[in-house]
Length: 335
Image (cartoon, rainbow, N blue to C red; front, top):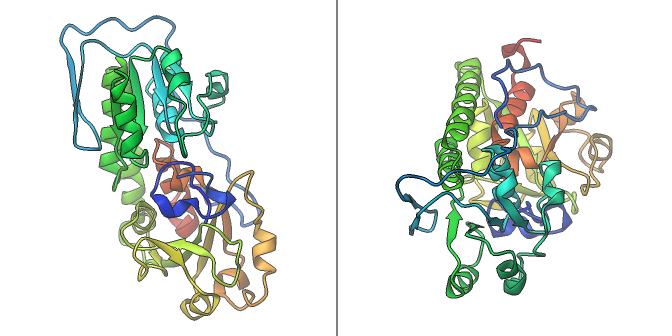
């Protein structure tokens, strides 16, 4: 299976697809896209500050996703991100100018490309390259190996592990924590307020709607047994909140589902994670041998949704929730 960029756990590293795991004004949710049209997503990135962040009058004390406590005397001025999701979060809360280093897979927003790369975070870290940037904060992720965190701390660096959220409130907490660490509490609070409103709007829109069965494909390299996501995952939660019923719910975590199982479950909708590195298209999926009898294929209910909106634990997960809900229940949203 392929890497979901960083976010959700280890299994997302099977094949090239998952070379992993700012506020925008509140807006109404648009209608569902046509099956052959890839969804366009608005950028949820806060304006980058033009001034250095003043020191906090009191120390910043936060508890990270690894259960540790980090204390900073002042907001971090030189930050290195070890994961694409962390890079996106830093920009979204207004801390882009404070980011001096990022992992090689961080590519969102576009401004991230101008930040110096510290190379891959898979395998051995380039500690020397990180130290040369003179960071006062390292943002690790839930999938950052503990030995990497320890190695960074042994050379005197402050490390904060951004937790892997298991629900949307936990995602919002991550944004607020990074906002505090970077000195952009006000921006982070405004962003979270907007995201919470959009999240609540989706739940209100699909309230009382009949569940729509769906299959989510993470990696279709083997169309006879594609990889998918089951119970206990953020994706499964998202599908449920959007008014869907995941046909792979019997799988615990991530795993493969045989074509025979998919045919028997006969999902009404099929969604696959798309991206520039994903060869699957709506047309190629519909043309697969044995898939033509599935209701979703027969009724042209096959959709390509940017994998980052479903698999990357950053603020765009709310965009993903909106898009999945639009696909499953287009009648519940204004055109």
